[in-house]
Length: 138
Ligand SMILES: [Zn+2]
Image (cartoon, rainbow, N blue to C red; front, side, top):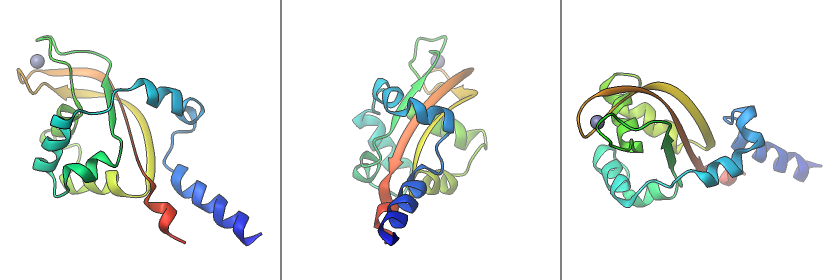
């Protein structure tokens, strides 16, 4: 009984941040989303206090619904830099959010700043990352 409870609490721990709707199709949705590039991993390393390898372990995926008017395809870096520049979140919050034990699949409609031309565009962004740190809690 204790083993079952441990197992269930572990699953709950890992799924607690999932949006129930996205849970249903989480794996197919995530598989259709591109992983972020090596260049993006290196830029995350420059922006935060973690290494590119640590970010790589999160299997970060990102897709924006629209492109910028200038033709630029928005990246996870545009998304992160927008959150910081527009004051939606602090760097510390973003880092804590990414590295806390969770499994995130989200889509949000917010403005995003283009790293190519600086224009601001309202679009829907989809992102996913996972950190199985909670499997080490018992
Ligand atoms: Zn642009």
